[in-house]
Length: 489
Image 1 (cartoon, rainbow, N blue to C red):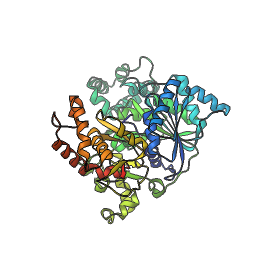
Image 2 (image 1 turned 120 degrees about the vertical axis):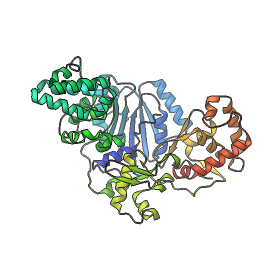
Image 3 (image 1 turned 90 degrees about the vertical axis):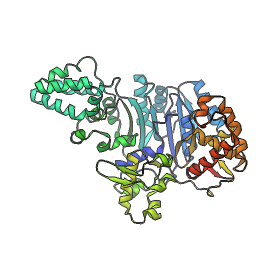
Image 4 (image 1 turned 45 degrees about the vertical axis):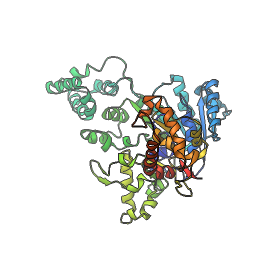
């Protein structure tokens, strides 16, 4: 699973809502397809986290399809189907009306690590046009540039040849403002830029970037998708949608002034100093709204980090926000917070704005919904859902375990230490948990690297296991219940 990329339905819809695209109502059925390049476990976990959705994985080989189906069978996740075939085959079937892929609310593809051949990329865009419903979202991760100077090279090649001397000089100054992050990492390029500005000789700088092919994947994507009825709906990395936060201060006005420029996306790429993108595109026509309650009232918002890792105070360039502390324990909707004692003195608009800042900063996450349970049971907690119950049958290895959360609507990362305690509680309950945890710790002790992730001593003891259970439960059990990872027996 890819921890740095969240193409789950709730965050995708949230980003689109930032641009006024009305999200589907919580609990509504939906269809979601993913082009799988490597790990089908991510899609199986996503399906387990969104029981009202029907998921489809597009896989090129019969062998990989069989492995994915076996994984879903082992985890007993029934709302995911895997379809074999190259994207061009799926496109042709869709054109002929013989496709087994239904109309879609979401389509995702991440080709950042393994780029698609050109014919497959064209087929992907055609499939998005053919299969996505009006208002449907296409989540697309890709490498926009092969080198870190790619955006700069593209802008120079596109703009410089058409400029007179005065325009070229102004362009150099604009590049300096836009490229604060880039030039900070490339002092030699910064020196050459300053020399060209001082000497009033723009070509001295441009000549470093006018050789070879200059391509922008983001520009190519705009050119490919806009004629197919798509509009850009934002970046899946939510903080990137807030230019005042993501881009250098010197670049803000320039970026805003370039909003209607056909090179706007490459200009942003250069300002943000990024080579990879995670776009969200919306199939038109889409239902729009200006009502914040319609756009954001259906989500819940939670903070999945440990409380000790979350700052109490968030300060942005223009605003300061006190942490909504209850969100570190359980996810809340805007209405939930307004009815909570912590929120009684706030107006709905202020709460909405504060939550959006927390989301933009990467602390809070927009999520699928609440989990209904009988309440935390420390004595006999049980892992929820067949995907998570499989933890009972496997040894915990690595730094973390991915679990399905029907609240987050996506995978939630649980540390190896937490996963071991959960496993023990699920097997025998709290009273006998040491007897279940200690053998697992003794197993880990045979591998010093694995043991170091969960233990401070080389040889585990019953006393150490008791303290580990006590500390972990007191810190995390409320969150485990709040995110639907555990339920009362």
